[in-house]
Length: 290
Image (cartoon, rainbow, N blue to C red; front, side, top):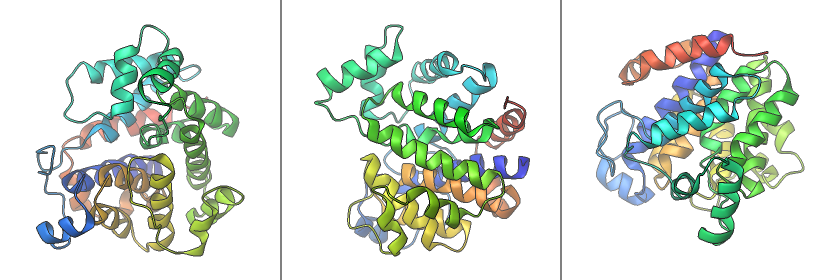
């Protein structure tokens, strides 16, 4: 169990670190600049250090810490860690999340609704909750509890229910894999009858891997269903460009969960600047569940 939990968090962070180099570049620009990016090198639009991650990993760790602090009802604690991160002046923060943080006045759900209706033109179906929801599936023995907290953590910042829907599908898959299920089988079971069912046809998505949660999820599921190794998933996502850090993080989290910590090449694990924190949080998450 611990090997899977560590694999999930390290997989997410590795996908983030790889994709952070190519974020906002087109696939053609990635190829022109890097050939095929296969190593964690830093740089990119955020001028990352080698092994540095972005908001995807930071907000995932905030969710994890909130659950560890108060597993029965973690929303308030998650919010505290969100604000602590926000006040650190991070390099990368999504527009939807930044807007909600600026509007927050003691009620996350009210701030998300106000942002959606008044400041974002009704467009809050971003991937900023999908990128951070994985710790919920790693923490609870009850699927009902996983679903409850998954949905609520999404609604803290993203009012559009398409964001929560993607998070629920993702964490149901994660829950099954954590408890011994096969990744491809779990995906097939959870996408059946949803807008993501076309991923089972095996074709590459026709949309860009951008910040719209539906597009992000399509690409995440594509990489997971079409790849044979952990590196196939995260390297594939990184070289597609666009919102590559987030697609890489989300796909890398499930891939790392499926392959386990020991199934991730050591050089990639060791390259991460936050590896000690990831190990510590993994150990704590193992015992956070009720």
